[in-house]
Length: 346
Image 1 (tube, rainbow, N blue to C red):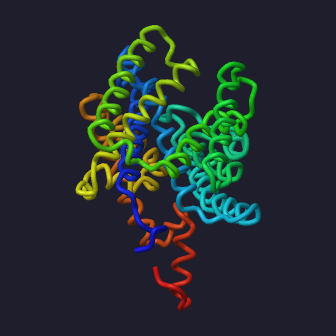
Image 2: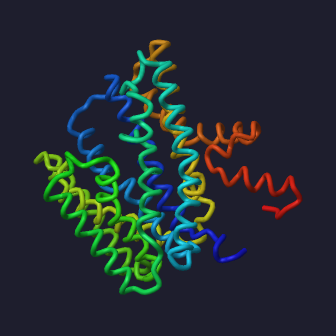
Image 3: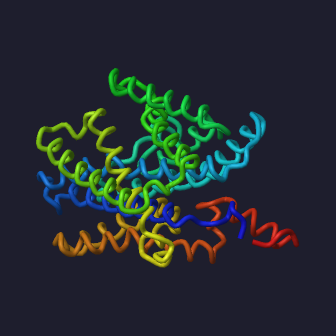
């Protein structure tokens, strides 16, 4: 196995944590919007707290993999690599944005947020969770791989300055592209920095203690912020996100390769289908239960979590049988075409 194809256990663990939090957050939002769960203080804390760091973990992993394994020499090479990323991300972005729009139109009486105009969802205001794909494509285009730590330091400093500007001035009047890049470039470049320094410094007793301290700080600080109504404050979110990401990274780095068959690694390896399809699976289960008159939270919560995590894997297998799995990753179509034409094997 080549270095470019080797999987790193800690990356899968981080993506697994992020997947679970994204799926749980969207599932609980649906239950709160339909009145099945109470929108009380505990919910406000949980929802506000996870939005400080769950998608940020994905950006950290993407930045790390981009810097460590990306192949782009010079500006021309970077342009080719960015175009390839735009294609790989653009196909599922367009396909699933359209599918979600169709689903919301067809099930309008039961959806939480009515669908707007399709062209706005595609080009002006991307919807959750697919806005992440659009933002990631822009970050790949704007942030080339660098060879030296000094160049990376300038890059992460610029990203921090842009994020601070957004926090001070507010981004209410900014377009989606500017706002999303400003909010997330810092995390992406932070991940690029991990490619230089590695994760060994997070391992061992000192790393575990630092991670535990950051985790405890995050829990106490987020609880205080929720009580004071500050979880939506950009500065609080930034600092809380940094503490939570450090705690998750330290925990993931200390998992060890002997946990390669664990749940978190499984979720991380299946992050793409879970991320793209969990909304359809969870919403379908919630609407089906509501249609038959089931409104008990103790039934909805586990049913939607199971559907969010395992439903996408069932759909992926069905899409593979129908040769539609390229909608998730168009490289699957290219690999299959090469195999059928007698080219390289995968």
